[in-house]
Length: 188
Image (tube, rainbow, N blue to C red; front, side, top):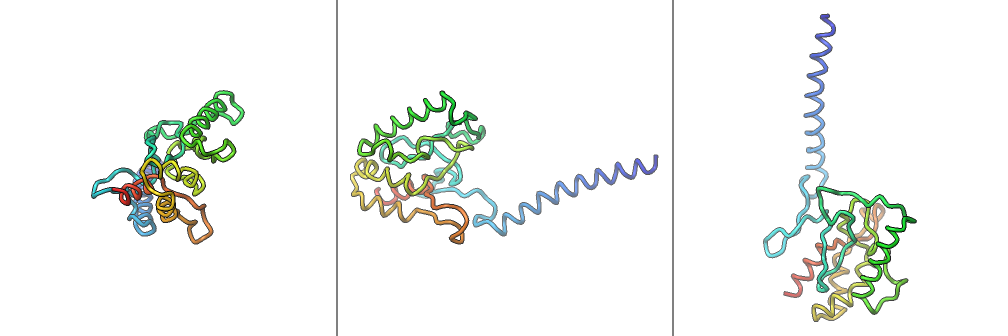
């Protein structure tokens, strides 16, 4: 019985130590290794926080670049995909409807020019980034809606393209919220 009591106390102590130790180790690693001291990166406009840089948001106004569709309506508390297979009739109908909507807003594009990411939701439903191609096809619409030249808008897009880490890890991408904030700052 004595060994059982010692084992029980040891288990309790180790649970507490390892739980707290694990959290502290993660927090310390994040504080040292991440650019924001382990805090979520936020985007500001005119000194006010307008959103988290790592969570997608819905933009529908033609003056803004649009991000990827979301299967969870951009609800961070309900992150997840639709779980529909690529040959599911409902899923295919959703994608077709998204393509039609995208082409209505971008009449200068042909169906084959619509980037797949602009009509398919990501696994989390909260992807904040699009590819440079996804931004490029929207430049004309945004420029017309803002009364800017395509060259001005393209320049802002090019400045916001994030390159792969160390030139090796990841892909070229554009954070939609940061891009839209940059547009607002450039075109007040």
